[in-house]
Image 1 (tube, rainbow, N blue to C red):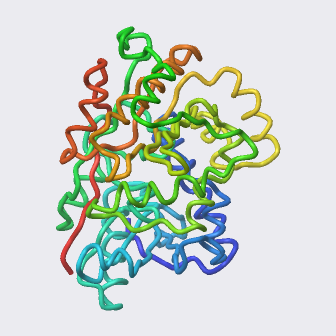
Image 2 (cartoon, one colour):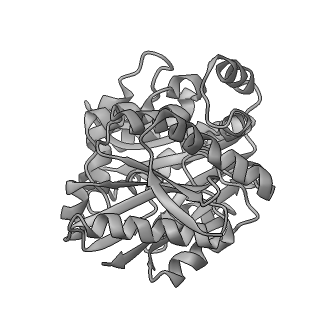
Length: 369
């Protein structure tokens, strides 16, 4: 099978780009493990109305005209600063077989090399702050919200193409029923007061959450080697629609006066609804989400952090106990945690101490051009 790569410039090609993953995963029998991207977000990449500008969409096609793979390419000046060189990015990678994935990655390298990039980095969609990576282990476990699931051959193909793993990490899973009683004892008001803190949860539909979180999130993650500061448009986009699925008590803000000193953002996982509707958020999907809210039993911890100047005060420990208490009281079954880097064992120990276990091993890949 000979494969060539073409840029998506028409609505017909966009439909093929949108429909490709479910076709590939249905044929492979892996639809119950995949994590669909939102179709509305992909359309905004195509129209240029996304918070991240300049995303190009690509299709891999056989000589007979069948679409067999896809990806995006993009670039970030802020990420160049973090990495210390001009870095070409790729993401949203899907391919029917090794040849297709290899052809797409080579096309991404050629595309960015022609534009002066000296490093290829991905898959990231559209930045590591958001989602990215390739699975290296844990393939039997389905992906979940804000993570990825890829077949085993992806990592092998990237390595054979000369890319090296960067930032190896794990996702984690905690069985709520197995959390020891003392670890899920909610902190009392006096414990919060002893540290000069108050506990707050956002309201479901009248929240200033984006404005509250953005300063502390940027401060908390500023030292990470891949992190680029999150602007207002990105923050608003990433929290868009949260009110439909959120349990407000799973979003924890530890405040020191008027300042958010620490935070946890965890949400019930709607990935089964996203799979059922192939990333569509139409009226039918919305109705299914409203029905699902009454029975959603799995929760995803998307992000947590403490301002650097407030670290060492035991804030994270209080917030984690508060989260565990709510999970237990709310009848939730499992807590899953998006990727924790192997270079951050302290965060992993928080979940290991209550019986948590690594679920997937994943990594971004890079190559000098």
